[in-house]
Length: 130
Length: 148
Image (cartoon, rainbow over all chains, first blue to last red; front, side, top):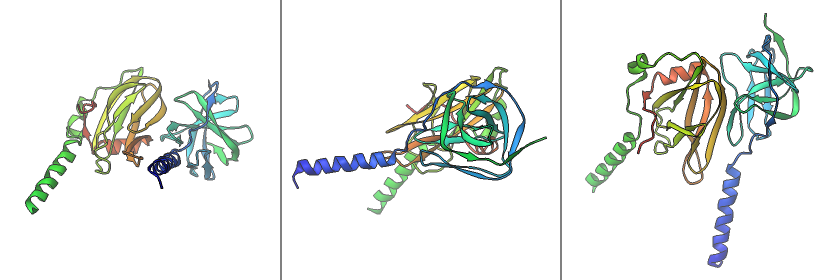
């Protein structure tokens, strides 16, 4: 193997390792958020969310969420007394976006005023808190 | 030979600890933390005392401005107006955390080392407020500024 081809192989390997080590960015788009505080909810069943970035997030049974507003895709709920983030190459604080059909359709990123949609909606079981 | 090895080990250890946070503990300085102004929120940045990746201590930027450094065993805080923020660290690559800060709110941002290609990376994550406060209380206050 010549020095040139050995160097090319080494560069390719480094590039491959670099790319393999890089997670995908969280896909998001600007969205209009309208503040509209509403009822608190609690999940009656846990849900697992697989993100397009290959990271996963768990929404535990019994977790509590407060309606803070709406986006065109649904109602926006932030966690009560805790924090929730989604992750790809970077980390983003995230609120749930729940459609009228009681499906999690994506995440509102409050630090960026953007929406990160899910590839496929996830049905959620929840009830309103008194 | 053994003495030289021991001396080298001692110097290495001293150098490692010299880079760790050495300020007062939270209990010793918490009374000097001022109350929040009505239109502001507070952000605590902290890092556990683990020696893993201890030599990697990048600056922490908040909306592009350096507010401190990620030091093992250390914490600092900044007060900022309510709004949207992006915290970032950069070693071989930049890692960011975006979040919203409300007036009167306190957020806790944990920095921790992760494996990089050539050097370690410092990842920023939001921590649960209770866990964040509990951990800050075990750490040393830094002035927030990176070592020169």
